[in-house]
Image (tube, rainbow, N blue to C red):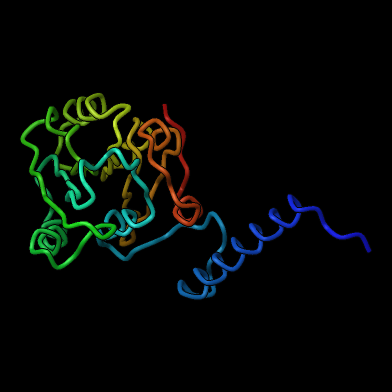
Length: 195
């Protein structure tokens, strides 16, 4: 039997690594995991914050090694969001090893100075569209709470489906924002195309 070439070995190792990663993730999620199945949470907004673990920002997004992660909020957040935000502002939780600074954006013009921007349901459509224009091409992860958000140019939408919530991902928007999305998040989100 001929020995495999180095590139063939590399491809085989990469495939094996992905399969191990998926099976590990599957065992932690239960037996119903399938690639491209939806990551579902029961009636809460924690999906948006969980997704932050699976995104990578360009190094130049942070001024210094110990610069805080700036999490912006545009619009009035729900009680569930306020509770989750409190754990970051109290210093109990970090994002990718960084302390978190919560920035309450009074208007869309402040959106470009954040690493992630949560656009709440309370935002009027004109304000949402303006925020998306402000951050276009900047390394800002935009997260909305409506089904149309990702299709309108946002990166992630947390969409409610009865008592459940799931994520929609616009990969074109993530690429435009120079954000790297982990394959696990890609496979657990509903992929949408931009209108």
